[in-house]
Length: 331
Ligand code: SF4
Image (tube, rainbow, N blue to C red; front, side, top):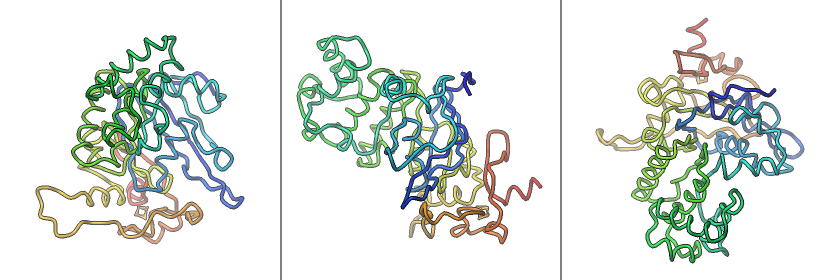
């Protein structure tokens, strides 16, 4: 299916991404659909193992080969389907129109190449700049992301920089070609709180000046409140709630979202112990075949929750939820 709605920068329709474990195929992302508008910051939240990172790797087509695949659905970027592109066609888009920053820059930066070598490569791959022009552009870019003495940093290696500086270098690499979509996968998790705040400020600033959309993947709802326009909550590979950021924080409907919000410590309340969500996300091999995937952890579970699989339905305009409590109301 080609010729899509170009009013959205990115559309993911009915995506299923699977992994093969001992010869059996399991969906890590299960029938996920979402849309990202131009200039929008969309947050994807949920605990580890909820499918957030697999979703982002599917969009970038960076899934591990041989053990995983996009099983069903389509991914459309700027009106064109990209999940069916060949590797060399995708290379024209990745790093240029869509780029990604990861949680731990030390695993993404090459330890044996200087910062300058790694940054210039982005320009040399995606633009017609000469090596000298690319180096000049690198210095400007490092300045833009707040790196002091960029002229000497381009000659240094990743291990010579602090964690915060390495993350700034990653951001510089990701925005070098002014991408239209930046996928940021837990971009501040490995950083201490003050550096985290600086990096979030930097991302906000870049998003506004470059008029870029950001898909922010995080388990931290505090970051979502700070950065996002819209939030998608994922649980066990599926979307369980989707709303604008205010509706989500003030009128969360899904019991999982409510528990996630309740687990954030508040500065206006005395905290004697932190709230947690009992249990763990079911593993791929232990995913319930029917019913609600949250049932074993849900304080509001009903008998039919083990039998009937909830579907993501509109609760109010722009606010969708997948929970039988609300399907009952609608029935
Ligand atoms: Fe809880 Fe049932 Fe809603 Fe699932 S469908 S979240 S188990 S109330």
